Image (cartoon, rainbow, N blue to C red; front, side, top):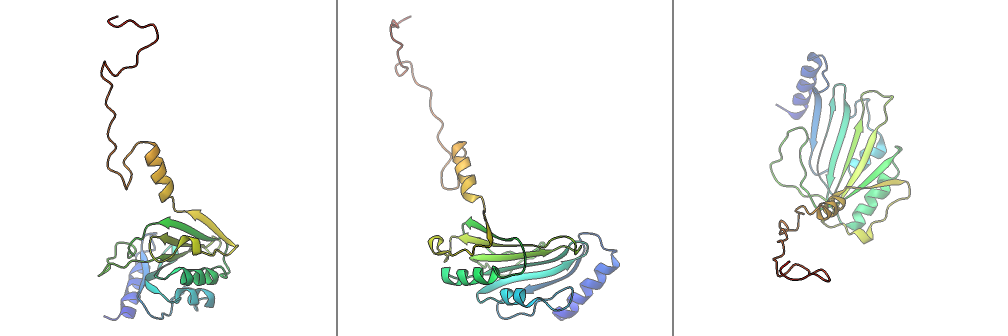
Length: 210
């Protein structure tokens, strides 16, 4: 069965299930190469379509969900220069706010909603957009940057209209260290041993043996 026929069949099945929030209407996985994004209201806005086709995309998926709306999640590989070009293009989307979330590490791409990839795909940043079913609700869009690959922190150029947020990995690492819990780079800390009688400090005027 072709991918198009599969998508149409899934859509018909979901229409038949009276639209519970979890029912999937259509999904579309994307690999490398130029794509023609799907759009619930017809033609995809040009600025978003071009961003989804930015060079370096290694994987992505997109779809519709009854009562939940549409989502897009795309993964990219590239160096600092490529990421800065992506951010410049991203900053021109006609959406507000535009979030950039900065993380530490380099994770693997994953298929949405329980899907599986046939190989490991590492990436440097990803782009996500969620469009609620109710058109009165705002769209949510953000980019996750992972500092652990080819993008160098000191070479990032962030457009002024982007909102920045930490992914929280460093903060969690510090809090775990302060709390004495095991941190990702440490073995479990050794518990201090109580001092022996000879090691205990003597108080001024204290007489041994008392």
